[in-house]
Image (cartoon, rainbow, N blue to C red; front, top):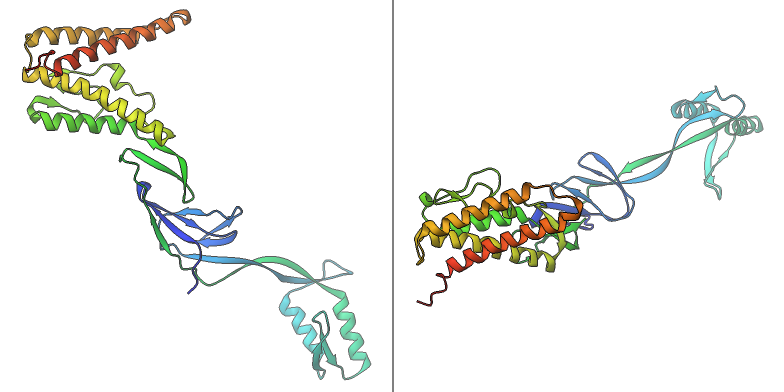
Length: 310
């Protein structure tokens, strides 16, 4: 049994990467030319793989005096056999040409003239070898989060990862709400991400949270974890503040805080819809940031029991 390379199973993306040396192969019926000797991704470790070896082959014979005079291989062999009737093969010369013991000088001359008249036309064909059996090696690298996925290039791990930001935020919202409230107290629609998530019948996220410009980010593992922790902290603060309001774990009347938060949410929405001039763009960005920070500070204050130590 022939065994070459390795078929690496990449758990995070659930696919195999078939690593093969430089050469030409038939993989699942498809001719694949691996120029760099790196590999080709396939869907299954049981892929049918055959090595294809280029080999020069004679296509036909053509007359050196008339290119319209062409003999197929079988026609050439038939004619040569007819000329060599009675001659005996004795050996081969240094170039591999056959040496005969001819019946007469005339037969020898006729054979030499025939050989010089017709010259072979060579072509290159791919000769199929026996099937290759591959060793499967499982490759699964834990990044510490199911939403931070290692990147691979033909089975080799890259220095970069993909942070599935939108999925991570949605999962955090569902986890926090389901572990702190009854299903009747919150609503998570199956569309539009977290935009229309409601707690106590009210939408709780503004554009600063639900508008995610890059739903999936390619970066280093360190930066991905920084983004992940920042996102989780921001989302958790908003969620826990609204959960505290719903549970009335506060001294100030719930209606007061809800009114303040709703007005802040509307201000955020209006500010995002304003299209400032170039000179005012930085100021608009600052207003958005400060408004969102104010809302989060209030929610953090609420979730901590309005500063009470009881």
